[in-house]
Image (cartoon, rainbow, N blue to C red; front, top):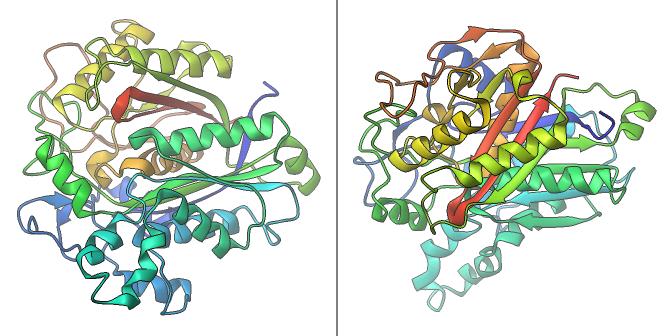
Amino acid sequence: MGHKIAITGMGIISSIGNNVEENFISLQSGKHGISDIQLFETRHAGTIKTGEIKQSNEELVQQLQLSEDNNVTRTSLLGMIAAKEAVESAGISDINTYKTGLISSTSVGGMDITEKYFYNYEDFPEKQKYIDAHDAGNSSLAIADFLGLKGMVSTISTACSSAANAIMMGAKLIKNGVLDRVIVGGTDSLSKFTLNGFNTLMILTDSYNTPFDQNRKGLNLGEAAAFLVLESQEVVKKENKKVLAYLSGYGNANDAHHQTASSENGQGAFLAMQQALKVSGLQKEEIDYINVHGTATPNNDLSEGIAMVRIFGEGNVPEFSSTKAFTGHTLAAAAGIEAVYSILAIQHNVMFPNLNFKTQMEEFDLVPVTELKEKNINHVLSNSFGFGGNCSTLIFSKS
């Protein structure tokens, strides 16, 4: 198992907490973060619920002690907070001591700012500083600059599997000796473009999302950021580092079926899980818990459920739950925050509840974990599937 990658730090901000500890407390107590929109400017405020972080951009800027004339977007601000916590929790004092990189991911990028000022750029030249902050890579560069990182910086944008692919890429860079240490994850803020887009697709619920429930209506969008610190075994030994968990497996596949829908037989999900198990060297029976993608859309949960049955066999699917009923679907950040939740499950030997579940789906015999449940957990499989059929699976292990 020498190919395993050590995870030495993690950081997160979501609608259920501003750091790892707060998120864990909410997961333990069943406290979700789905609420009416308060800070985000949209005509849907009061009618559509989201997993909104109840801190304004100004408050985030103050927390990070940035200058007021910055051009930093909300996506970048959230990413800075999570990445800073990850680096600090890894006990890193000089980020450039080893060959260190940042692989960040986003789908919203700076849209939350540019859509706000788009029609005013000519009239208000002082707002033009935000134009450069629009593209996805800008948030990665802003986070790297904030951390003082001088090494490799890259950005991945593969919709809702983005952070999983960032984590996977970071692991491969370490495995192949390109880097010794990589900060990996994702960040996304709410924006009019994404909210209106998902609303147009008619996959938003008018209430609270209910993953893997027969009567599920759709998802709640959310905003969040989460990062892990991956380090080589050599650095871990040299620095005598505490290891939170290991990334033991990963897989990416595409079902090449539809722009926004998963295939009926869950082919992409099936192939991603199959590949992750192969990379990990684990037998499928060794998976103790699955953090499912579980968006609560009719298409996704059916497709993912079919894929799990194909992998594990009827009646043999490990215990599973979706944490998106806590946070909403945070798009490119989803795999990042769920990586943190998977590691917390391993550290504390618990499985988190699939909130709002009432009725079993009629297509298969799958019932998620509905209450906080203690269990000895050595291996967690975490799924993240994106538009365009981009499906990714990560496996986290205790040792």
